[in-house]
Length: 366
Ligand SMILES: NC(=O)c1ccc[n+]([C@@H]2O[C@H](COP(=O)([O-])OP(=O)(O)OC[C@H]3O[C@@H](n4cnc5c(N)ncnc54)[C@H](OP(=O)(O)O)[C@@H]3O)[C@@H](O)[C@H]2O)c1
Image 1 (tube, rainbow, N blue to C red):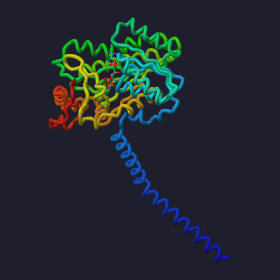
Image 2 (tube, rainbow, N blue to C red):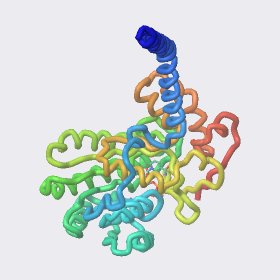
Image 3 (cartoon, protein in one colour):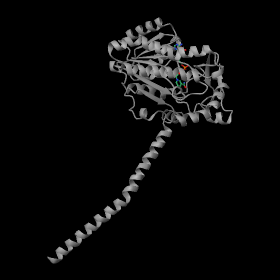
Image 4 (cartoon, rainbow, N blue to C red):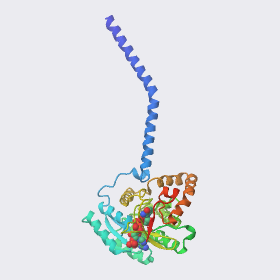
């Protein structure tokens, strides 16, 4: 009996010792373990950010479901080429009924056919429309589009043009034309569509804006101004109309690899419109148009107010300008003069190496 008791006692002592040792070890390791986990998580976030091609809020959303836009009518302006064409294909692939507008009817019809390849039963209307036409024409187009399939659910303002020109050399007419196309046009078209949307109590306006509206873009002052004007108008409209079912998504892409030899991009020089495509280089940092179109559609589907779609360093500069403007602008003032000179010489404004060390790629201006 005594033997049994004593052996029980020594077992209890052993348990106690093991517990104490475990507690000691836990005490010793818990802090380094916790710190290690935080460091690994932090490192993972940094790597995630370095590799990101959009702001972290947008990347945290789910991918588009296959039928994301089923029974929805989406109007894409500037759908005849480039990003607009990719947007049309993405919306078609996810079930949307489409209204496609631009000035070039032949190209629109080609895009319509491509959309039917990805969505055979898709209902797609093509309308020729110049966004800078008088307001009465925009009103008529809005009425036609709204009547096509029972109401516009998404109005995607994609039509627009870029600008590569030095501030002091740019003709005043260029300011008028660019602001008319990139800001006044979409503003007037929004105004023309609003009565239809408000009467149904639903509708989302999606702007294909630009990171140039967030980050002052040397060599593109009017472009930055035109996109910033549109952003301000739509952001205000949203605060005014959100209680009546109207939403806004402002998507700000950085450099996108549009502008092929077959479909050169619309870009304003210091004197007027030119057609432009990059011949070589400079495309590494430019995002694929399909990826950008998917992210814009995703932002619209998830009802995101504002999103940025760009790789670094544009993304990082965006965050700096937004949250630490003094530092962001200090950096931009170092890079800006070189970038403006590069664009003025017909080069790319996205090749840091060429900007710092000269040379690099040439962009063809036709
Ligand atoms: N590419 C980039 O790096 C980039 C970056 C950020 C934002 N964005 C924005 O994304 C949008 C599309 O750019 P993108 O690179 O695809 O340009 P793009 O290849 O030049 O295409 C522009 C589209 O807008 C249409 N358009 C031009 N002027 C018009 C007018 N007066 N009326 C109606 N439609 C007109 C063009 O069609 P028609 O000629 O047939 O009319 C074309 O379909 C633009 O708003 C641009 O500012 C582009």
